[in-house]
Image 1 (cartoon, rainbow, N blue to C red):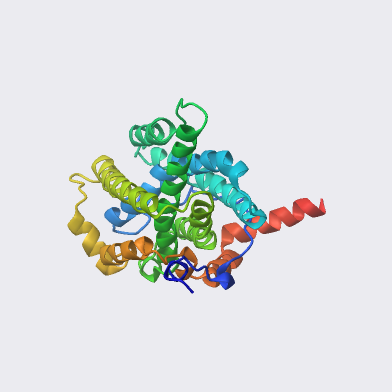
Image 2: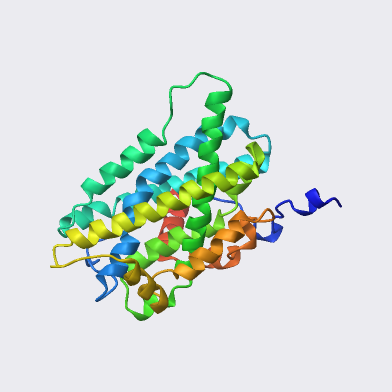
Length: 306
């Protein structure tokens, strides 16, 4: 085997599973503003997901629908179609949290308007001539999504194992939303990377777009946490600092900064493949017990019988 062949990403085949969208729904009437009791910072840091994901995952779907004609592998095509269905449901589920936050006195509209601009304008379609320029912009966005999905899978694996949230008495409906979503992120964690490898696979592009994605996510996340803390009607001096994030990570109510940093060289390794991280078995097990996912499955079976 040549050195080049030995350095190719190697998928763990046993981690593959067929994907399907689960039409879940959640009721937010009983979810308090600080759904991690006594910890507005942890609550709002995680709440940033509700600001970023609706527009971000609609963007994923939009880009992937454009790239479908370039896919020459039938299993990968089926995986991408399953991914599109799951991401569309994620966008909808997080979007439905926003009116509840507004009802509790925390209007997210000023921030979400900026996020919408980012994905629809800055990262949206551009008026480019057919050919190399248009394909270049499509491949750049495919690579960006692969980099972002590395972190959504990281977060999904974290929340599936974040037992401190249970010990703190976190709201069960919000936990189910996060863990249902996280489990599906782990379940489909290889799709974006495999699609990028299939249509391009340039290591230089992978590294460059990782840097862009990581910088943007850090900027947007800290800005979103500050927005929530400063606009929380129950706080008189709301603030969000890296020290707060570090301490919360040490306590287990947020991801550890050290774990996040250690994930960087793994993604940048030439032998990296997402199937080498996380556990499909754990994700599927949670989806088999998630109250929202179970209710969606029963509703689907009932509709099939009817």
